[in-house]
Length: 86
Image (cartoon, rainbow, N blue to C red; front, side):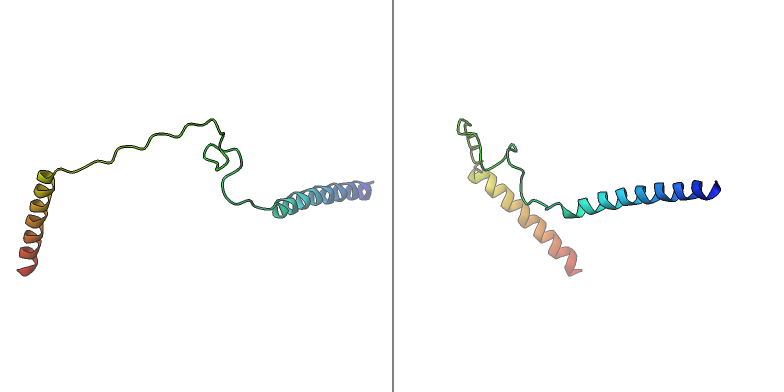
């Protein structure tokens, strides 16, 4: 009686291992896809009724602002050169 019980346990373990092996094997056989999935929000195949968003206006720097920035940078470079000269 003990032998039949052991054989039943071994058979159950074999079945469990075979199902685990099949599950692991199926994971490796799936072909990976590249890029965005079809139908995603930013897909290249967008709905024809979608309206494009307007481009933001480019920010412009005034000549006075450009001059202030240049002077401040020259001041930083002078301080850096002075510090390395010591």
